[in-house]
Image (tube, rainbow over all chains, first blue to last red; front, side, top):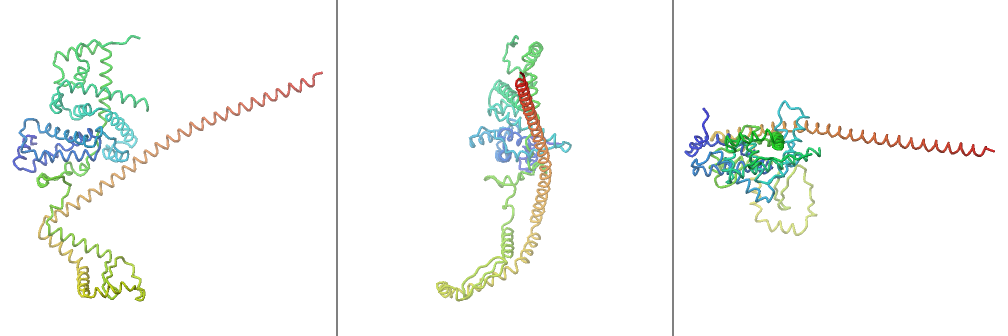
Amino acid sequence: MTSTDEELVARSIGGDADSFNQLILRWERPIYALAYRTIGREEDARDVCQETFLRAFRALPGFRGQAKFSSWLYRIALNLCRDWIRRERRTGFVQPPEDVDLIDFIAAAEPSESIEDLVARKDQMRVVERAMARLPEDQRTAIVLKEYHGLTFQEIADLLGCPLSTVKTRLYQGLSVLRRELAKTAETL
Amino acid sequence: MTEHICQYSGDRGQAIVSYLYADEGGFDAVERTAFAAHVTTCEGCRAELAAFEGVRTMLGQWSPPRLRSETHSVGSGFRSAGALAEAKGGPHDGFSWREIPAWAQVAAAMLCLGVGAGIANLNVRYDANGLQVRTGWSTAVPVPVAQVSQPVAEASQDAAPWRAEMTALEQRLRTDLRQTPAQGGNLANAATAANPAIATVNSETLRRVRALVDESERRQQTELALRLAEAVRETNAQRQADLVRIDRNIGAMQNNTGREMLRQRNEMLNYVSIRTAAQRP
């Protein structure tokens, strides 16, 4: 039977290293995806992901289970992303170089997908990436947490430390910007 | 054309988002029913909801690149929790030399030094011409004694008290170099026998290298395929552009030809009319 996060956390605090490894296996991909979609750079997203687990491991004895383990991890990752954005003095989203994007994209290709489909999908992804890059950080974070991580409005509000209505407003504004940007791109194609 | 104005009494943006995501925290049951009823009559809200659905579909196509570690196994990019505990002091890599005992590191360093010196064909000589350190496989060009400058000769004489020591060092280096391969092998074997962890580390390293090589090959193949597809696409685009240009040029040529024919016809008519007028009495 699969252990819950809380059980694994409890065992990790008790010194069971394997339990923490299981937590890493379970949450590595979502945390990396969150970091990537927030800061837009693969290498840095990987660093943020790794640093998130390192910090979580260090702070684990102090984790009292007030929030879900996943929310706690998300908060650490988002704080690290915010630090990264501040440190780099960037808008928080940098377009990856074309050649790097190409190879990494290929790696994610479905085996049944033809090269033409792959190229078309890559173009679509670039369009979405560019549109996301236009969003202010708070709107982008809200959309990433809602669209790709399926968090509820309340969970996002708790995570970002803002009222629920603010989350909804950010989502609405973000979607409106995306709609405009995507329409603009469609016109130029 | 009349512009449709939404009559919804609440915060329209928030209501649309709540309705779009069907989030339990967004609406209560009464609000949901009220907004659902409103949507059926409001063209603007319906259009915006449809547009947002389209945006969400597009967003669904954006996936981050794979984690490098996923090509082997999920999570293998991280060190174990035990290793994390050791690395509490600072940043870490995927592999740490601290995991290998110091004596094994010394053995490895000696092995590297020996192999490096062997490959470089290190040759140390101290004779009447002074200390000579030579590397490489080409034979040394003999330098005539007469060409050796006076200061160097003086220097070698000054260094005479060190000669015995240098000779001993040379002998020792030569002996070491001769023995290093065998010694390295013995050390490695001894290390493996003494500590099975070394064997595990070696096999783990080998496994990682193999996995990296496999991944690299796969990436190269897929990259090549994509490059080819892009090249084909670019060629097609170029071909289309060329066809359009050729078409335009042909059109221009046809225009020119037509214009030229018209000019010649006019000239001929002029000529005929002039001749006719001239022949008229």
